[in-house]
Image (tube, rainbow, N blue to C red):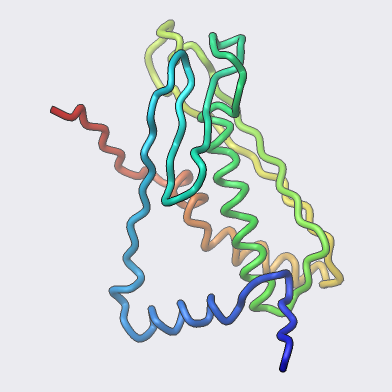
Length: 172
């Protein structure tokens, strides 16, 4: 019986199989992702994704919520950080780089006046900053190459950094 060593605890065979499948049939690259959100009262809601336990959402007390869970903008920052973490783990593994520790600290600035109905304009983040800290035996040059690869291929990063059409319809 052979035991496969998994660098960074990544199943590189599964990633390689996906790459091979997409190379063989480009239609397999087109994917659709979904979430179903249900309001649960007050400013609370929960998001159901595939078969996972629902992810709760609430607002801080200063915004009228019960502060029982991360709010949507915190979840958006978390989504970016989680996407980047996947990118670092996958790309480091492909490059043969061992990651001993990876931390991504994110923050964003929002002017609440539009959200509160006190002004017109942009209600979202004015900017988002992510600071990535990597502990690895890899050289600085290898880490910079890894960083560029991750930034160049992050689906959430690209979505946030681009003008992506968003359609929000009221169902009949």
